[in-house]
Image 1 (tube, helix red, strand yellow):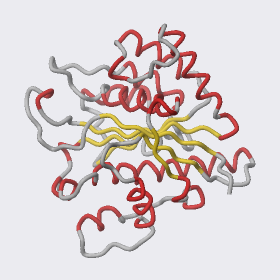
Image 2 (image 1 turned 45 degrees about the horizontal axis):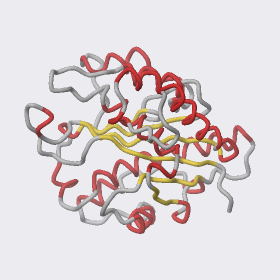
Image 3 (image 1 turned 90 degrees about the horizontal axis):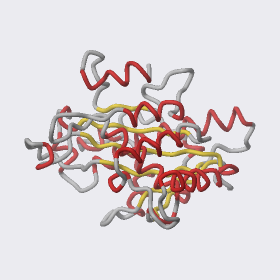
Image 4 (image 1 turned 180 degrees about the horizontal axis):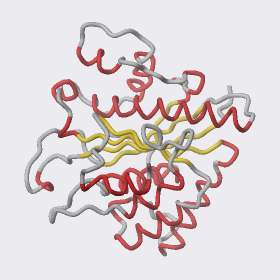
Length: 272
C-alpha cells in the first residue's frame, strides 16, 4: 500500500546514565527524539525548506544542516525559517536523572532509544490518523525514516514494532515497554520503516535541528545556562491535538516539567 506521510526521525543527547559535574564531563541530562512529519504529496517542500535555510545561512549546497556544526546566530535564523514551513514536528523529551529504574534501560543496548521511539511512533500514528481523516486521504500509512546509527540493527527496530503488538511477560523491561501501548497500527507497518544517513534526506537534517533545539532549551551549558529561543520558534509547527500540545507535540518522560521549575518557563509561556 502506498504511504500518505513521510516521517524523518533523529535524536540529540546520549543514552548514558553517568552524570557528572561539570555537565560536559558525563552523560547528558536530556535525551530528545524528534520527528518531522509531512504528507507525501508535499515532501518536496522539505527539500525546498532545507535549500532556503542553506541559502539564508550562506552554506554550500552540499553542506549538511547539523545543529552542532552551526553557530548560534545561524541556528536562530534556521529555526525562524522552519517556523513558517508546512511541516509538523513531534518530540519525546526524556529527563534521564528522573528515571527511577535506570537499570531497566541500561541492561541491554538501545533500550532508552527504543522506548523513546515507541512513544514517538504513538504520536506519529495519531497525527497521521487524524490528518488523513481531515484531508480525506485513503490511508494514514507513514513511511518512517530514522537517521542511521552505528551498531543499531534496523531489522531489530522492525522486530521491535512487532513486539509492541505483544503482551508483557515477567520481564521488567517488557512490562514498561508494553504498558498502555496506543499506536494506531493502520499508520505503522514494519516494511515502511528504514534508516538512512543524514546527507541522504533533508528531512533528517531538519529532525536533527529540531531535536538539538529542544535539548538545548533544557540542557545546561558548562556555565549553567540554557537557550530556549530555538524551542520558542518551533511552537507554530509543533503537533497539537484539539489545541493541546503537551503529550502530543511535546511528550516528556518520565513526567512533565513542574510549572514552577525555571526550565519550564518557555513551555508554560509558549506551549500551554
